[in-house]
Image 1 (tube, helix red, strand yellow):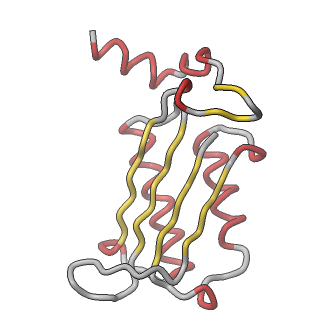
Image 2 (image 1 turned 180 degrees about the horizontal axis):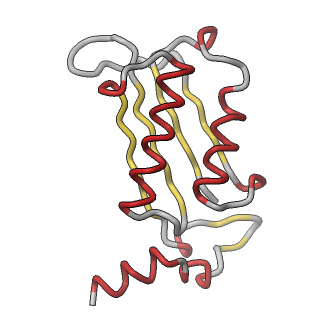
Length: 132
């Protein structure tokens, strides 16, 4: 159940209407998760400063059970940055994206905790091996 949060000081009226849907579609493919469980929380007009000024910027997070690893994170970050540059008119050096892995048993959906078998994703297994 991925949750993508985009905080930006860009005004809502300056963001294309299709932006959230386009980001949803892109992240559905990147994370290989069903669209029905993808959340995109767009917080426009946020009171954000970066480096002491209020020039346009983005602080985004990607929270997901499985699918996150350095290689895929970098590819997703590039795609997200390109989208922010094109549609929000933000320079790449004013974009910060955090990737937060969520253990299955720390996320509930439809009245139950997620099945731990979802953690058999390749990235979760490789993380477990590295921790041994």
